[in-house]
Length: 115
Length: 112
Image (cartoon, rainbow over all chains, first blue to last red; front, side, top):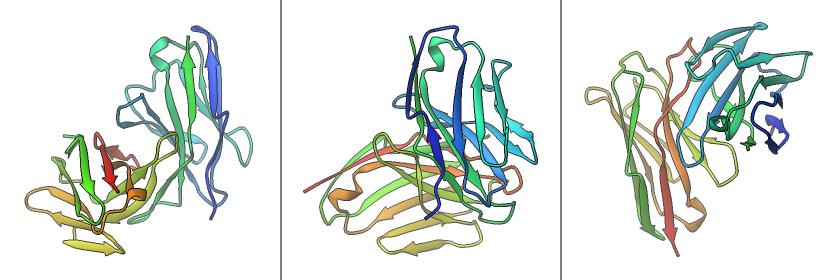
């Protein structure tokens, strides 16, 4: 079964450093997402991306965050200057074109620890 | 309005028993309600989903019951097994906006 793959699985970074999390969405999917989950809490939406632009973003997704699809397969999340509160599991997800009942598939996550 | 409330926070069920997890929402624009299963250190995996024009959907041991007028939906796991021990999240989405709103999660433990 096709799957969303993410790298790295775990990254430790110092506060103030830039971090790039990478994702390879399912190949025929056109919608891409980043979600995050702080330890023990619910999964929260960060941003959705379609047709090479952000289609929606949450309040969490401030100017420190950016997304990019640098080529035909990768989808990245950049945190420009990490803060302690950015420590979380970041999930990439993808889905097929808009339609009723389409499924959003999640990767296994990148665990980010900011020290 | 965008919240999905989930209960209970944790649940212990004996092997073979029925696990029931409940969710409620406020925004009547939500039109797709999936349940995700998450094992420790893994991403959420879609378990089963329902649309509000259907009151019940069953897939194997998993059933979603949907009450549109009460704006509530629930997951029933029949014949619960130790392998079902995981965190379960309900979620809701408005088709066209592609943004899942998750519940707070239920940690299920099925005792052998």
